[in-house]
Image 1 (cartoon, one colour):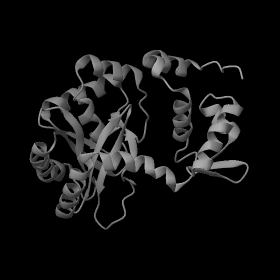
Image 2 (cartoon, helix red, strand yellow; image 1 turned 90 degrees about the vertical axis):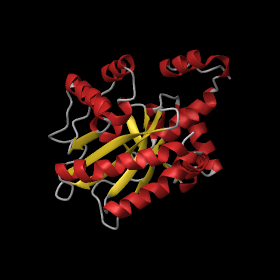
Image 3 (tube, helix red, strand yellow; image 1 turned 90 degrees about the horizontal axis):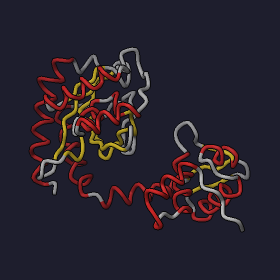
Image 4 (cartoon, one colour; image 1 turned 180 degrees about the horizontal axis):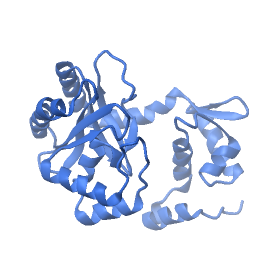
Length: 266
């Protein structure tokens, strides 16, 4: 069978990785990542188009996932199965940071009676790696694995503040800024100023930029050598979490927790 020509994105990955680049694995992961909240079920044609694969390659990848139990099909549409969570569990169970953070956030959430999270940056998004919430329904469905735009969240701005100036400028130049609410800051110059302010003050407070009626405040979590490895967050609806409460009550608790956790993080 003749070798399929690589797409531009595949060629760049291959050039960066060198001879150790495994195309079949890369394509399989791309197919898995094509599924999301808005694309819960897709046809073969949908997948092939989204990941820039010939139908034959997409078909083999999808049927391999079905054979392994990571996907299912009714003959027309393909869906991921709960077995795919084994991939997430592999990260969470092998990451000591998550084991340390989860009980700490549960204690803080119980004390404050608000949702508490920890997140890391993945490209232009932040992803929750630990989460705890009180027994009430939040409109933000924050949970482990939940993703949000880095630029519009306090978690993201804390993590971006850990970048040096050159890396930050590159990120701002290349990243889209979605207008999530009427108060979302989208001007890159203003965003840079907010991130630099976060770096200087050691925290970020975002008021209803990611979701209307929802505020969040975050601080960096550093390991023993001072490297920022995650961000800690308290989020609350605006009627409960006033701006004054966020800074006078929640912020000191977050800073104290980050300080207590640092000696445990290698």
